[in-house]
Amino acid sequence: MSLPYPLRISLRYSRAGRGNQFIAFMGISSMLGVALGVTALITVISVMNGYETELRQRILGVVSHVTLFGTQGGLHEWSDRRVQISGLDEVNGVAPFIELQGMLSANGRNSAVMARGVEPNLESEVSDFPGYLQSGTLGQLQGGGFSVVLGRELAAQLGVGVGDKVTLLLPQLSVTPIGAMPRLKRFTVVDTFHAGMHEYDSTIALIHIDDAALLVRAGESVQGLRVRVDEPLRAPVVTYEIASRNPDLVVTDWTRQHRNFFQAVRTEKTMMFLILSLIVAVAAFNIVSALVMLVTEKQGDIAILRTMGARRRGIIALFMAQGMTIGLVGTLLGVAGGLALATNLDLVVPWIEALIGIDVFPADIYYIADLPSEVRVADVVAIVIVSVTLCLLATLYPAWRSSRLEPAQALRHE
Image (cartoon, rainbow, N blue to C red):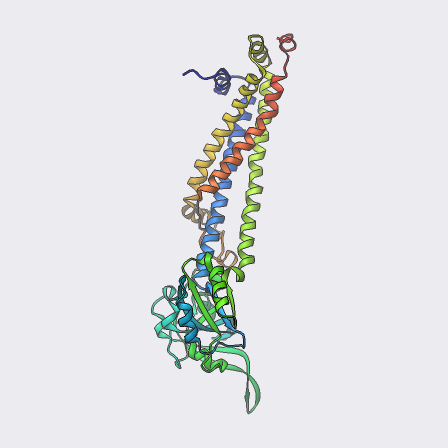
């Protein structure tokens, strides 16, 4: 089938070597600008997606999906509560905990720490710590043995390894013959863990829950229960169900504890989308310039077409097709480039770091040591729609201007 004449003429204008060379250059630069903008958008949005997903997975591997606290400063008869909550449909596991904030000291070095008292036999139900251990299992934590598992970064800060001693200093005071003193206890390092998040690897230590209870003089009570559910995004629903059945407990979930953080990540993703869309907008503005100059150069052709019976809408379609050709080719090139870059960041980023000799994404700033990427079809489709729409809008004014050209006036200068 033969193509409509506006499209045939548009394709002829797009061929290399035809028309003004500067106009051809403007068209190519506009195409490359669109491609660059789309590539940047896909890459950055994919990184933001991967960053959010990776953070959520690593955070939920350490923090609990749902947390229960006693309203009187402790949770008594927690084993009965655990059995009750474990029977709920969407609950995967329940385990007790006691958290202590203090300071670890060793080799003349000090570091703030969150010491978490856990039940080794139950902890695997609510966290991924057993899989993060470098050598042994949580069974190495024995009640009364005062052993500790340190985050890898925390152990490095203190300069200790397996078998070394560390001193835990708590803000609670103990009365001694020489006066009130901070509570101190020596622990033996039995293992280290690597959660992959600097914040946790440098601040968390695991101890047996019996040792933690002894330090805070909690007796048989615990600070609370940690709950893991089938689907983390359903945590608020499970929280409501637990709270309705246990009105004497304070129940919260990870979406409340980390709401501001993930909201900030989503806001940043939206702002990056809008900012990087300006690259495509600038390229679209170049399309306007290129088409205006093309209309000026092709006045004679337009006049001849009009005298041969071409309608105004046919002239509009001609130059819209010319601009959309630039936009569509640029968008397709950008999609190809963006997908190639986003799916190979694990190779590109180390190469850049080796080239410039700088750690581009330090873990202590960006929480994780690697740069993840997750390409989502919905995001790619949205980027393509935005790019094509901007390019389409860029063609409207030049195309309308070409349709307003009077044949007699244009041929007068030929």
